[in-house]
Structures are given as structure tokens and as C-alpha cells.
Image (cartoon, rainbow, N blue to C red):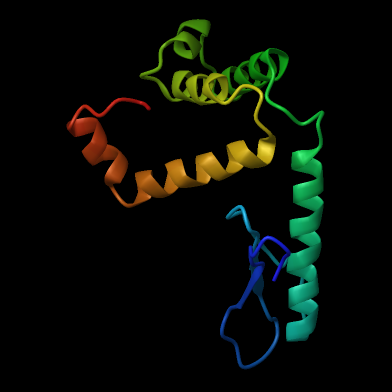
Length: 141
């Protein structure tokens, strides 16, 4: 347990033999998993902790904030990847436009904060809640 009462949770995927897989959930809710073949449960925990630490340090570094420059580069890369046009990026009803909207709504936040938000967004999409909210014409807030 951490000083402020927040917990770091380790969860093992049930397995009777290797490879063992472990997930670690950080106090902010970010979850990371072991990334290599782990012959022991202890090695799986260490692997998951190492990935969590590397991602947290990298994503929370002050230079890893969402800026106007980052948004422009990310949207341009998305347009190039999907052969999109600039109008798509300006239309929030397209996938790339929604991506731009999400980035602009999170300007100044860390990459880890944005990653957590996008995870929630994806879960809402997967379980059908996002579609239901759209049908009820809920706002983007």
C-alpha cells in the first residue's frame, strides 16, 4: 500500500504451468501486463511492474504533454495512415475528427491521462454504452 492509501494491484492469469502472465493496476487505474515468456509467477510480476514503471515514467514526463504541435502531427499521421483528407480531420463525426476532438479536449494533459481516457472510451464502445448515449443524443461532455 502506498502512503496516500492507493493500492498497486497485481493479478495473475490462472495457469498451472508457464508461461505465467501478470497484470499490474496502478493507483490511477492504468493497467499493464507482463510482456515476455515468464517461467515463474515472480518473474511475471516483475515483468508487469517493469512495463508499468517504464510506461508511467515515459508518459508522465513533462515533455509528454498534449500540445498543439503534437495534435497536428498525430492527426496528419492518422490522415496519412487511412488515406484521409483534411476535411475529415475537421469533422467530429468521422473517426479522425473524433480523434482530433479528443486530443484537443485533453490539451495540456499527460499521455498517461489521455491513455486512461481512451481506454474508458473504448470500453464504452465495446459494451454498447457509447451507442446508447449517441442514440439519446448525450453531449460529448
